Length: 428
Image 1 (cartoon, one colour):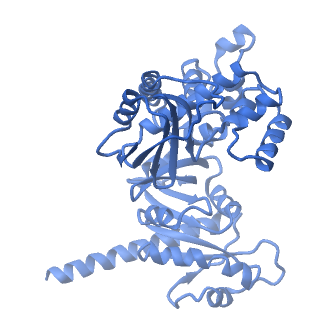
Image 2 (cartoon, rainbow, N blue to C red):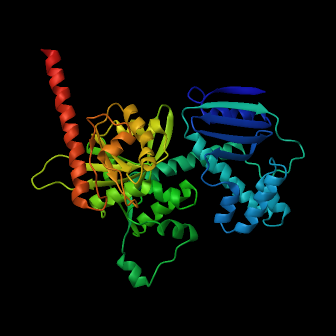
């Protein structure tokens, strides 16, 4: 039996019900840009599932839960690499005596339910079911009914909506909150999962980053944050990055993330925050790690604050360009230690061209060189047009860093005035 089609026209729950009613054995594969998942069936029941990219594979899940050690997992992965790669890590761990069948069954069931939770949220993508793929004597640890998987997946989706209504947004910043009741009780008791989450709540990472960095499944991390919020141990604050549509934004680009963050922290260290922004590029959700600050208003100033942010190096160029087009201008940090270090910024120059003529200032800085490149040498190394402004800067000097931002904003204002004059000219 071959069943295939579009999730937009035939939702996943309908596909699962059809496989259940036909009591088929086989593999259902789902794909969309940048991600795919598989659910494995025997006689219409689900016995394994995963999603890629997957935050927590089965072996890592067991390790995080304290069911196996890092050495046991490494040994199982090595055996998988050296032997039959089709053999699952769980089966190897059982053979080695590192876990029992009950423990593994619980972990597999949780992974199936988490995969279903993720896949049920897909409204776009393609699916294909291929019969076969599971032999009659295959050692299957757990089988879940399609109805049970759907009920749990929908329950998690509903609970996710409730959790996010309280947390506010994945871009909100959790802060630790002192509760006087804790002092009266003499302390608090936290579960291992709660410790994982609360230990990285630093007032800089946003909710999405805390979930990712906690090392536990995203849904579980969200539940923990919700519990900590309701318990009075954390509070949520709106992040400036949420004002991207309304604020005047300047994007900072450099091939080295460290110097982006130095530049931003010099502007406003107390207000520096880390975010995991999800942007839709084409039909794909792309995660963009972002570091951001806002510049406070000058006296008697009106309007939105200026947002200055940098996207982590290595993200997809089309995603970076789409975000950059929403900005007023760009600061291009260039390492002026040598010609080779300066040329490392050539991909950023190309990205700026793809971003639709975004006004930018090239900012050479020096890290270790005793004979750094001058303005002309930097311009030559990057083949810059004569009208591009090159402004050397000491990244830890707030005055010169702030002047760079003002220079970019001035270029943006000049571009806007020119566009308005051209429009008036065309109308007359």
